[in-house]
Length: 321
Image (cartoon, rainbow, N blue to C red; front, side, top):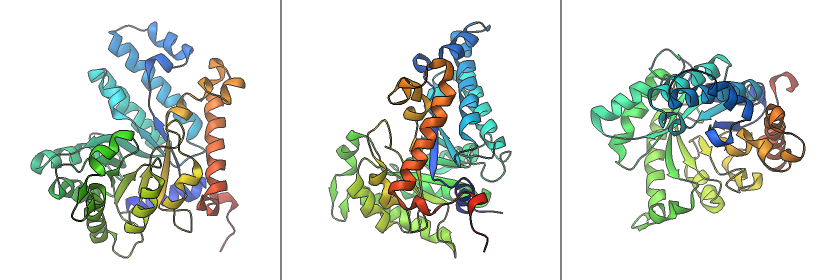
């Protein structure tokens, strides 16, 4: 069975970029054509909205699948629509897997004992999308309940070739309220990082990276640099680029010298690119997919210019060994 890190890095090398595109559908921001198409369908408001979210997600995947290695559906936007939203989420995730993308479910699950085992069993399909109810390659996990709340996810990831990304230093301003609280061993987020490091070290074997990853926001570049040093064998998932204001240079510390070891997420600034400059000057809602493509390509180029992602080359352009 191929490990999660190996499968992820294969995709990164094939596409030549570490960009992951979030899928964050919001009704009021959807292209008018997508809204109108769903409004004409039968069913409840939740069912019609879910239909629009599914359509938008699939059309977004059509654009980004040739360009990036992974997508990250935000589960909450689908869950708010109940059963219909969950069906739409499942369809979008399956569509992404069929398009050859790594799928990271951003669900931030976390619990203890048999409950944690049930969450892991439900979400972590790993290499085989049929191995779980939800066809995710990887899942974001909340560590608040402690090490024993993480171990069931790690165990399931190991057995299925899946990955887990533990929330360590999140990108939101309020992260400092708890994550920066001092302890005898340093800030609380560094204590979480130490547990992640220990779990990762037990899983890596002879590989540089294993299935245990960490979420670290690019909005905290100093902490990101510190955590990269503390977590040398941990793949990082980096939110904060784009709408949250972080730049490519602030993400640079996340990568190793080969341009691997991290994924940089961008959600709203790509999903709804045609609503924001500079793309709003070039594209309207009728050409929203062109704006998505342009924004994605611009991010790819930006990371290549300012980080060691410049060392990545799409498979077709790499020099044969």
